[in-house]
Length: 217
Image 1 (tube, rainbow, N blue to C red):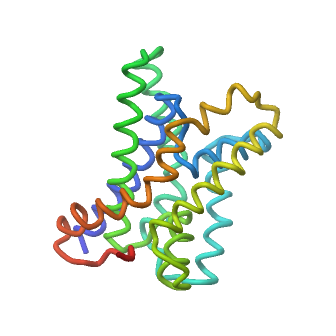
Image 2: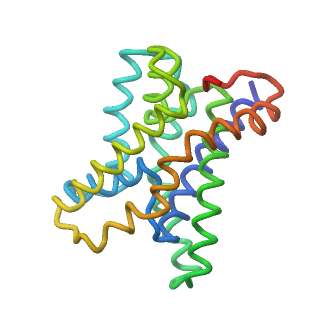
């Protein structure tokens, strides 16, 4: 249990920092954060507070359909991820105010790897997942709609489309869309599901030394 708790905390914190790294890359954030960027244009409140509100709504979905995915990691994610992302980004901008193009590419690669490893850690720890991850997991494991990696691709694509539409509706310029829905977003939308499953199998489960991850093969 101690190892599971540590994996859950590290997984959530890794996810929060990875979003800040995506923002530094400016090639687009991960799909859910693309959605959050869009809705934050429509609702002008603190990102951290808005993150709590949106995830509270998604939490209701899990409470209705499968409470198994609600746990320690869910509430760490719910109350801390938005604020950790916000302050991590401020710190990175303070350290590197104007990243060069090669540095942005490195940020993108590092961000993708970190967010997938972080997700695999808290999914495998099985002490709750983020409210967004729970949506695809419930569809895959509870409703048996299909494999997790394919369902995750579908939910990610929906988030990117909705985020872009809300961003423009909220007054954002079309030329700014690549910063929230760029090449980095496309890569994560189509590869994040398979990569999370890869790290669950080859890293997180071996670290825990038990096949407790709930991602379908």
